[in-house]
Image 1 (cartoon, one colour):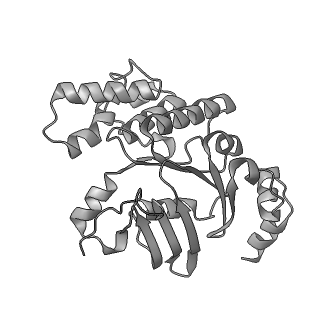
Image 2 (cartoon, rainbow, N blue to C red):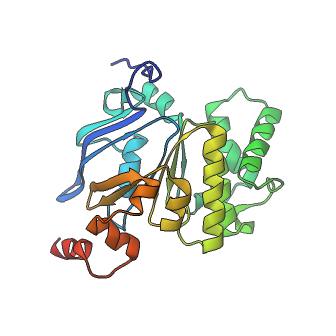
Length: 267
């Protein structure tokens, strides 16, 4: 089925729409009827503990997994209804940064960032690639490190190089999977500021999954709580962190006892 991007400026259709999304792995019902709409250039943070379904949800957004039930629509296009060519072109509108940066250890920083450029634009000249790589490094605050190898970088530097690679193709949608996990509070704040800067410069829709509350406060326009495969609460940033929802409150306060613990024990 041929699909073309919807004219979101001429309609009230959301840029990203997830409707009644279900995913199972055997007897494990990982996503249980997820519904969310995300506007263009919005920054949404999805909070939740380990095993909540956050990474599986992110994989559905970018089309790496397909729904067992329900729909994932990107600019009006349904991943399940597209052929291989259409899927390829839609996926190029995404930039994704994985945990730990996921760099190629055998390549230096320049070639890591240039990798998606060379795959997507085979006619680009070396000088054009060089200019884009340098621009991406400037955006993430890491100029002058193109010749270093991943082994020469700190954990925070590796994450930022991963960010630079994610924006190499000037994506409309940025996905971040636990971008600050394992980092100290100072580096967490630095990377959160970098994410905000990237979103503003690219005017990109940004979706970040994390369990880091401080980072969520810095990055988000809207915050969503995922628990046991469901989105249990969502609100604008300032309202979200003042909520009295018992599951969200337990997560934010870090309490060992509460409804979330009781629900997990019953599983």
